Image 1 (tube, rainbow, N blue to C red):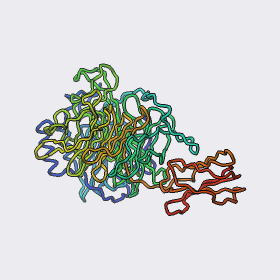
Image 2: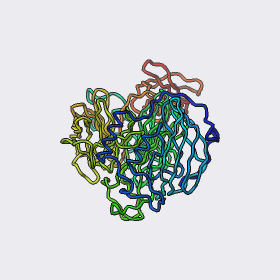
Image 3: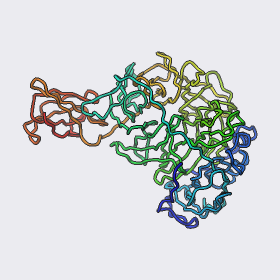
Image 4: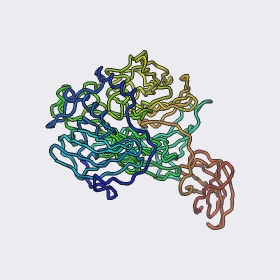
Length: 635
């Protein structure tokens, strides 16, 4: 379990003396009238999450939590969105109380009382977005207790009361055994004289990029198999551009190009992948010079999981975490002393690290809806398995739950379900070809469409994994298949991970996750590019972006001699602007003159020149300008 620490020194120590705040331009997280009507229909139809009394309850908990309809009504009555949401059955003992609202929202006072631990004092800290504040209790809550919170909140020029009541989880200890490594192909590892520390998996292009393929670089994060794990950028011919090796026992996932503070950043998760099927680590952002600019950690005592990382224009990040909790699972024919891995979603203020919003699957998604078998022991049951989160346009969040076979649109203010696509109790009649199983990477697309990577396994429910573009029509309540993408060259059934990535011009890129393959399709389903990593190597996603970067440091050079000549090898990890290399040679390190120029050929270029005591190499851009110079090395 995480150790408890006191609030940061810059936090206010009085709950009645709020700090100065930054006024952000973030939209208010208030339910629209249309969403409220839709939610009312869902409640009436029973499509929302089950009451917790029917889903099982935390083992040994002495206080009952709110049923789902009561919890939603309580949430709707609040002037701001409070986390933990009313009725949350398994909040962290280390939770902060988050108040998210319109710009200018401030918290004037907070009362937080645990049924066992009593009244809690704490501090109030403001979000950098100017859209609310968090109350940080000075000590943890007791496991299994009920907590009642009331607060005076100023929003929109008015002071109103906001309330929530939640139950604290009995968190279960978990085995820290890491996911076992798969054997791989020793020949499928890249090696470079100039960069011996860079040993990623090879990248083999089985179909070269055809005319019409989207321009850009491939973004991957290989792990498993052989070769070092880490985020990797490659050219479409398979040539390495940049690789960031990670320390031992660390892997990377979700490597992408995002925007932070109006600038492009490389973003990825890194940490340990446990045999239980989730990760424990943190998310990082790097700039276009490959320098770290931010680290994003889960709040409330959790550790960030590997599945979700989305940075918003407001400077927040959406992440997920897995939290195993003690639970009586006899209602679903499991153990009375069972353990359930809950799926937790957080929106984090990157600058302050505060949790602005938090949602738990337990209490909103019925455990009886799970397609994953229930263990009859205390092995943690991954009943929902969240693997994608995307904030929507109207105070909603799209979430994908692998083990429910469903994509769900969640209302932020209440935490309730707006609609479910697929799985048990779908809000839509599923048309031909629209069913998916064990899916990943659900995303909103223009026109209200939703893209999904349909794994179809494990266990197998289909013959091939597919990329799907679906139309969930809210008026007809029918889902139709708009497009599907299937690799025509080989049967690819990915047991885990994977993505369906929309590209400019109507193209789509599929990464097969648990398989080393990736394929780009045009809008009609024709293959434009196809490739694979080494045997048994995995990459959670494979993406494609335009990318331009100035590599840090200077080019790296390695020299070997033979028959009166020097073979000068040069590389510059991460450089995208190098068009050619110019070798200079001379009798001393300070007296060098150009002797040869050659075009860049892949990550490492080797140029043969006459023997000389010293050489250096200059990196030239397309205009012939010098953009970097290596140190002089002995010939």
